[in-house]
Image (cartoon, rainbow, N blue to C red; front, top):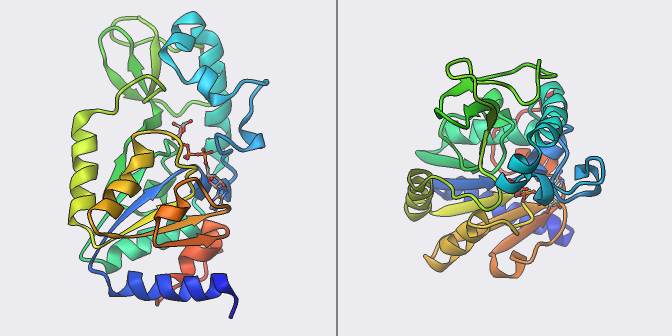
Length: 250
Ligand code: APR
């Protein structure tokens, strides 16, 4: 058995025997669905990095440019379907007494796969929030009819209902995430580079409060040495191996 196979075996035993699980996902889990990650080379758009566009300053400087970037991301996400990693997490939720899925992803693929208890800590790309009256509407049009889109109620420009760099995640969402970590036995951290706060620290909170923390990623991250186990590989291949009744999804 290779070292990684041994770790997968160990992780499977830990996950099968725990009653309560909290999961944190990042862009890596959706990579196999064709959604570009943020920090990989495919995350670049017209030579901009996400940190240059996903900010309130960038938006108010040039709302049209920022919306064109979101239009591009929405077109990639619209075609995407959940992969075996998303489905495995949805199935695992059905097997556990308590499982919360905290995601940094704004693509909605966990919902599409059937996960129920989800905290979208960075918002959702399919919602537009009015910059004046705060009204939030679902909007699935790709491409958008106009950039920026206008509020149906007050006519002011809308923004994506996501959390940008320099903005704060709503306190209630953070509280619920911390509570889920407090209540769990095991935390799984999947497909995140662990460089964006406060999500990056959630695994450390789990570790410091005595939980087992298992990471799944294509490569080691700066936080890997702090966790109990790091399984290297694609989440869509590893996750279905981590519980008993795994099925083959096409
Ligand atoms: N399986 C597992 N991990 C993968 C896979 C895969 N198939 N493909 C890529 N990865 C890993 C990469 O190695 C990387 O460590 O997923 C991670 C993705 O990291 P980022 O692109 O930085 O994404 P994420 O950590 O989710 O970014 C956090 O930053 O731009 C903001 O708000 C945005 O939510 C995002 C946040």
